[in-house]
Length: 311
Image 1 (cartoon, one colour):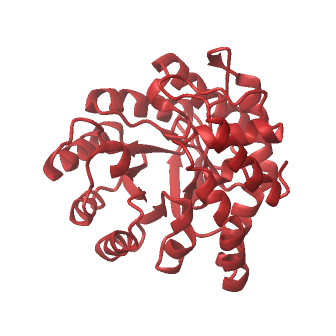
Image 2 (tube, helix red, strand yellow):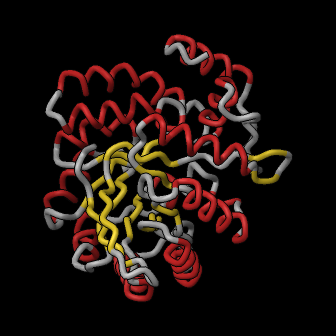
């Protein structure tokens, strides 16, 4: 696995210390629904498939997990279920971000108490805070929760770009251990890597920049494509870690059509549709305001999956 942040986590009540490395192929796992409710059995099956496929880490309740439309009760259940099923076999980084600092602290404290290894915390969306506001938000969450935290910068979703200088300020906090960079800009990724401490983990937030990000010093990817081809995404990360750049590059280009197809429509609609086509989940159901994939795009997606021998 590509080296990443080593989480040194105190397990309260046991006196043991658990060390896990967060990097490589990290799946931002979808949240399966059935008739409008959580499909817990489908989620459990997906988690086992990921572990069997070599996925290095799981992120429940990220953007791909439709966190924005989960109730607090559902959010906590997904996090708890993931932690219970994983049972320490790979790290779990729970999505806990919100556009409210108070709510972010509440969800992060829940992830901590539930036994997650770290939290993934998005920049507050819709509010459009200043760089100072972003800094104060993340520092407040880190200081209150005292739990390993990975920042999540995705301006296309949130309306605000967390600049490298602000990331570097946050990285001075011992609990802020990395960032998921989803600007799609290798220039910004390079600036973040250059500006932050060497043990600060920079992860690609876009599958198409995963391999290039590794090449400039990143440690992995929080991936949509890993939902559909987890074995191959993990193999790309493993090949790079072993120094086999030819194989890592080959896998990057093999997977590239999938990277594009999974954004024919808003994520996670194509990923869920693909998993349903593959028989991995009973239904590709998404929750409003997301809508089912159009017939035309569904056919385009099917052709890509056929070319990859997935259906």
